Amino acid sequence: MFDDSRPVADGRGRRQDRMMKNIQIIDGADNATFSIFQATDAEFAVIFPDGQDIELAEDLVERIGEERAHAVMTPIWDRPILKRDAMGVHGTLFYDWDRRRIHLPTSKREVDWDEGSINEAQRRLFRSAR
Image 1 (tube, helix red, strand yellow):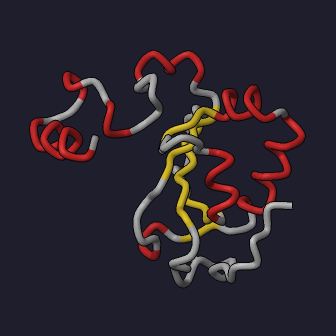
Image 2 (cartoon, rainbow, N blue to C red):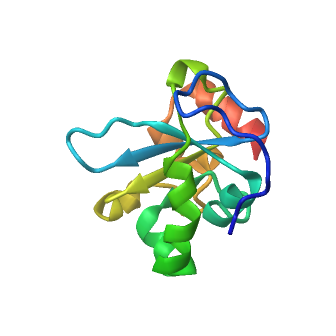
């Protein structure tokens, strides 16, 4: 459904496909792996609309419905990439973080973190990127 016919990195994560976007998955489990998966541009745009680079899985499901969220995420789960091979992280998807949502920027953009939560170098960087 969301396949835009671009080649993907092999399932072993041996090379970064420059046509894909990397999403780091962070869940609330104590044994979370903080793994990175590749998404097509079309899949990424569904998960992170309007310039977002942060999303909560619960919000994604509420916004597009459980069936469509499942259809978007299913192929992504088959595209893990090793952190050492990833050429950047383009978005972060949080699972089971609803109770911690108050700590995330309401815009769901990394550059909008509360300045009290980041160091001075990040403040300068984020200000220049807004």
